[in-house]
Length: 330
Image (cartoon, rainbow, N blue to C red; front, side, top):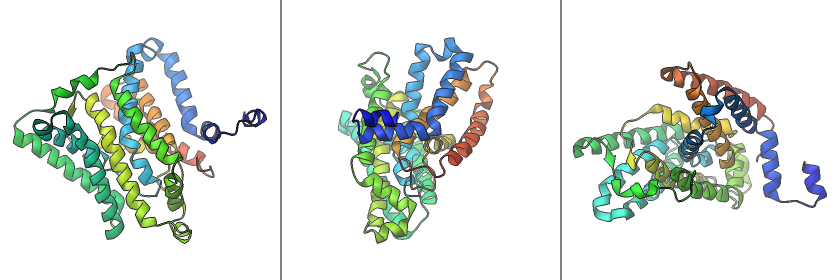
């Protein structure tokens, strides 16, 4: 295929990168395999319009949890503050709505950016391991979210005024998916049309080498965490709408696993140095297809679903990490 493209004079870097992604990423073949398997086993349920819409919704949620932290993982660091941003950001929207009206939704990206900036500065200046720092941040923000709910005396932190966002202007494309598209495009733009993606991968591959090459490593580390927080804040709007314009008040560790699993399944190793948001999108789809397909299979106990998925994910991550050894940065 690559030779054919060269014969007709097509030398687009986007087409070249797409071909490399398809050829060298196990997630692509996993997606095709999962679609074939579940379409053959439960065709009526898996291929139904309602289920395809559900897949799009869950893809939007999973990708919005994972796409921001991907930039931090490119550095070889880890950012798991996305759940805290999602939870407490929603609590802030609920608190500010009586004063700001519909403009209160803007607090999501602003809050995400500030949390990411704080994480980046503390990680760089205080030399605190990023996983410990961002996990502590999530725990703190989750506690504050529950505290707001408890002192308010309400069962859920819901803002019904945003229900209009749940109505999709395009048939068969759910609103959470449409709200996630601008975030996806922004992430891809930052990765492929700016120097950030190259610099982040260079730092993750060889931090000392990046310093010798003249890259201000500390500055770009802080920037990566800030971008992660901003994209998570923007993406949290799609999750907020998906949940019925309310925020989650209980901390579920499986949501942390969902974000990291999407990143690793897509082919961005936790060691950093390669990958990117384009791979994370594939990993998010793999995760969603596994979860959705297993849920539809007859005889599968829903109570054991997380056990099955965890086992499959462990095997998939091992296979993916082996297949990616020696792969180029795409």
